[in-house]
Length: 238
Image 1 (tube, rainbow, N blue to C red):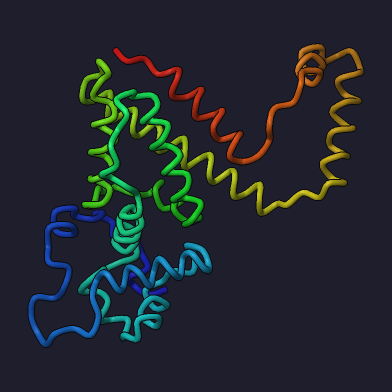
Image 2: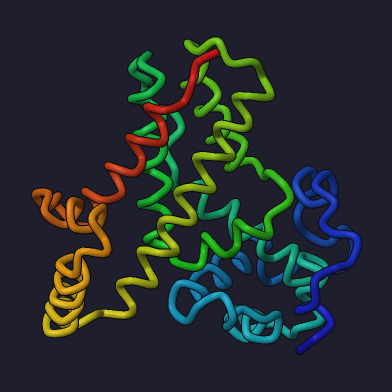
């Protein structure tokens, strides 16, 4: 582990990170840019997971010495901030809103899920995120615009966006873990037989009633949509 792979104890200074030029101020013109470094880190995380992203690996990907990267990203914490904001640029921010805040908020949730499925490392990275870069701010602006028809105050609107993002991140992390487990049909059938036996023993009447109900669509998309609908439809607008 290089010194840059350790998170800085003081955290990332958002003004220095997002309002600076993103390149060293002195010396000869660099052979690469902060955008290129971030893109290499994103590609590495997409292919091998977040744990594969080290300053040394990223430097190797862009053909640079590891020490030269520190002018752009002094540590992995800063690099993660750059990565999250770069992929957030994939989120659309100019499509017209419907004016129905629940419909628009659900659409935002589906966009976030699609982004996190494309970049499976993103839910974990978001949990340690502290700053809002320009792409993230643009998407936040869209979410706040979607919430304008509500009677929520400013703090409540920010809380709703944080609640939505947290829900999507947690759901996608679970979705990815379930897909990785890849239970066989035989295993699923064995679990169903077990639950049926438990429900029939007379000691679990609530479970027996639930299991007797018609099943609902169990595709990942359908499950996410049901959960998202419950979350958003249950929000109060005042």
